[in-house]
Amino acid sequence: SAVISQKPSRDICQRGTSLTIQCQVDSQVTMMFWYRQQPGQSLTLIATANQGSEATYESGFVIDKFPISRPNLTFSTLTVSNMSPEDSSIYLCSVIGQATDTQYFGPGTRLTVL
Amino acid sequence: GENVEQHPSTLSVQEGDSAVIKCTYSDSASNYFPWYKQELGKGPQLIIDIRSNVGEKKDQRIAVTLNKTAKHFSLHITETQPEDSAVYFCAASTSGGYQKVTFGTGTKLQVIP
Image 1 (cartoon, rainbow over the protein chains, first blue to last red):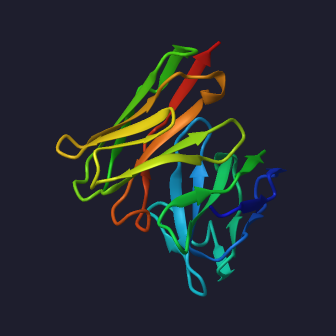
Image 2: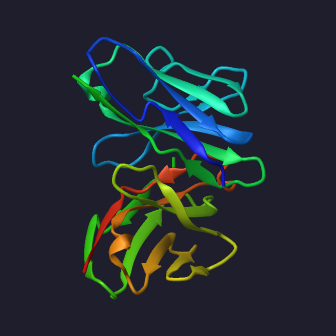
């Protein structure tokens, strides 16, 4: 399985600011996703990160709030823009490898917005 | 779209006993059903998965069963150990994992020593 790292692992941010989360994979992967997990809740897909093109967003999530980049097959970033306390969540990067259709998750970034 | 329901939301068992978590799905086109274990402060970890062409799959103390007619699938953990304590999520998707994976609401399992 792919080894996935995320930076930062956690952060505390002020309302109105933005935070960029990085996801790095140790091998080339077919697909990369970003999920949000609110406290005590299940996982909600934010978007599919497409290499070299605009991300595909799920209903309720927009590019202006969650801009995503994926410049190559091993790296992606998610920015949480103009943050409010409601954005306090765990943000998870997920990938599907080239030789499998199984999804693997990174360790997550725990974000607290004050 | 797909809807996955998961029960129970919490489950406490004595060490050595078995634990069963049940999920139902709504989309008859779903053909891939992974299970994830999430420990506190960590990302979900895939523990077992099953595809629609089989009815049961085992991996040591963990087994998953699938009933396509009834559209439900279950996770069975035997001889539970304290390290099995975690939140477990079921999920469903079409076309393997390449399409959107829809997650259940999670089950918090506590194994009491």
